[in-house]
Image 1 (cartoon, rainbow, N blue to C red):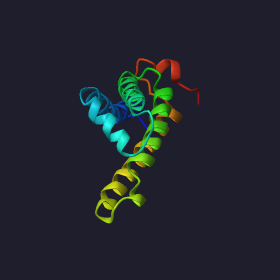
Image 2 (image 1 turned 90 degrees about the horizontal axis):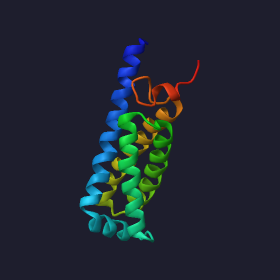
Image 3 (image 1 turned 135 degrees about the vertical axis):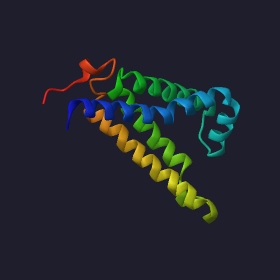
Length: 139
């Protein structure tokens, strides 16, 4: 594949993934009490701390993906965060039948997001990133 095309697609992929996390983290800041309530609703302990962690991971990880700094580390943390959140907040097997389809859809959407993040972990941010030169692996 043409290097310019590969770098363009990697940048677009990073931005698309960041578009999921950065706005979610920022909305949690403005709706902090609602976020804490939602976390409490699934029975997780230390809901306020969990909300702060979610904000830090989503905002920090989103910015890392946008800039291309620490992309591999950020993508790995975001993948783990997404996996845990998916299990707790999209447990389609444990909801009433009328909610199962939507939760299953969200569950598998998140599985796809995790896959994209793991590709970034494996291949790095690409050359069009602030950290691109540091994270390139010799072929």
